[in-house]
Length: 317
Image (tube, rainbow, N blue to C red; front, side):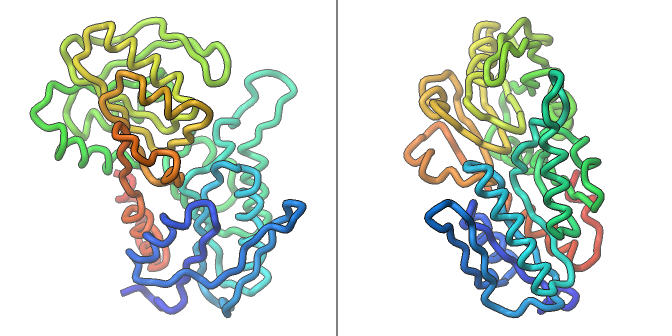
């Protein structure tokens, strides 16, 4: 049971209703009755159709495509809750858009992740729950608590169940992903390799070399985001050229923009395992190479612990 379970409520935006319903089902709760729509000119309208005064409300909304619309919807949901006298408001953002714009790569550019964090905080959020932030430093952009959950345990359980008795090696797609990949390699007790790549421009990269021995190995690439798919496909091709037997790719956030699905279908990827942090139901329908693991149990447990004021840190392991 939750402490004062009647005081906890779940409100869903429209970006990923299926995940929100699954989380609510795990918590044995109903979603808050809301009316969210867009006017003809694109303005978003949010109306809450039940009393939430004094309640602890968790707003679930991924800021995925269309990113700006979904972000604005999140802000308006938070604002509506604040003006309805919610006791506290937790923004549950399975996929945090704009996370890749976390620093100035060239002069005179916006640090968009910082701006978005300010917008969410100023709208009235008192806490953030998200999954596999593109870079951990984004937690410091907020002046409110941030729980950044990891999918590594979820992926590790899948590998132990479905890829056991294979000659495995974990591969980081770039130097920046070594920590994430090492975490998974440690959990499944295998070696680590690194792909040294050069990014020519956003969405395009060139593999320079592979650090580590992948000869006759079943490779596991782990990453936080797959967008256009070009970088991952290039990495898979490089591993096969180096003698890898097969390649499995584990990615938390499947943005899958442009021709990503076709690239994956034609690629040498054995299986792409993603989560439902972004709703890709229509995109990946009948694509046998792609399998979805749900983060609903993970997020439901985090919400329950926050509501009960108990530790969330064990979920990071």
